[in-house]
Image (cartoon, rainbow over all chains, first blue to last red; front, side, top):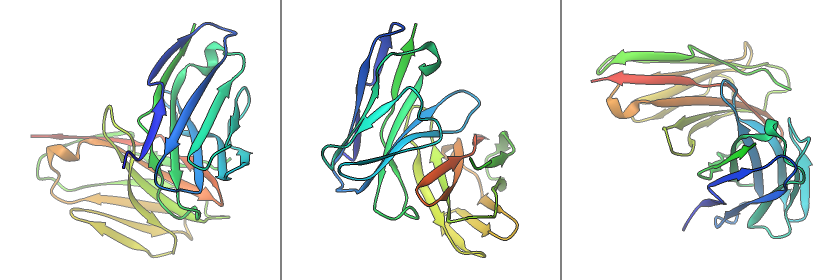
Length: 113
Length: 110
């Protein structure tokens, strides 16, 4: 039981490049989330999904797109990376009621130069 | 956007001391309050989820209380140990949107 995994762990992009971050969970969770974590700020919700085929915007969705084609995977895309997207990205998943705890992945450190 | 605030920002205590920190959140549209423990180079791990006013949860030496009417939660650690050193995050959610505080960084000095 791997829990929540994220790929890649580290990445350096040049401004304007695109990339996709993959989050996978093997706990059969309905809900999945993408957060970013920046110095001096709390985790901020980018997008979330309450089930396969559904996505919704969080607090800071601009510049990101997501897809949930399979229940176990939640992809975060950056179409044209900007230095402001330099951050650590965390994925999380939970059971289908938001009073349940979230399980977090190990994070992806992204640097955009 | 919910404004979730935690205090203090950081804390140093001696091994064996008891300590507590605060999470404040808007009391309107409240759904649940979450506490997480976040060790350096690891992922946040859930400690407690509380939903009802007056809730108290306990896990070993760590406990938490919730006051939804005035919008605050306390996390208590009794007899701090070096392994308690971590950042403690709280988050409030309204439905599916979660809003995290910036955390309290706890260092327990042996």
